[in-house]
Length: 177
Image 1 (cartoon, rainbow, N blue to C red):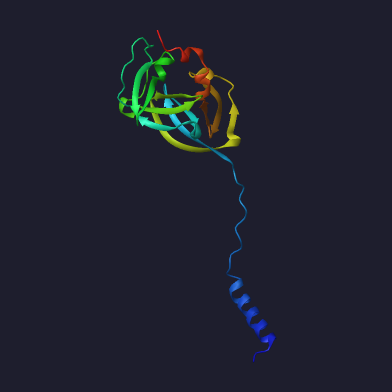
Image 2: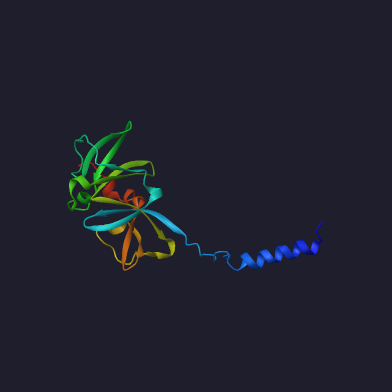
């Protein structure tokens, strides 16, 4: 039977032979908290909306016109058995959509029991930006008071649109003419 020192010597030999080629544990990386956001374009500018605020993104659906509503209310669409008011967001802001019709999308959200869709020029996709790159808004662009702040991404900043602020706007909520 082998002596305990022989086993120890064998293990020491293995450690010497293979230990020099082994890699250490990876260095601990700093975990950066991010916010998942949907990037979209409206009026030739890029904006963000938090992913949690968007129910879905649709191709512009066929809409039924409504009588005696403002011109920026495109109509209502049946989305899986639920009536979705569809709003031309650029028209509400007194402008015209700038993107090609085939690229337009509807951002669907539900805020304070208001289910609606906003037509935007284009949806670019989902982005994850570091929370520490968020800054309060200092200047207001075309979306004005519907902006909460901005995320600084490299050399440019992208404003954060908040649908809650749109729902709280009296002018937006008065759709009848």
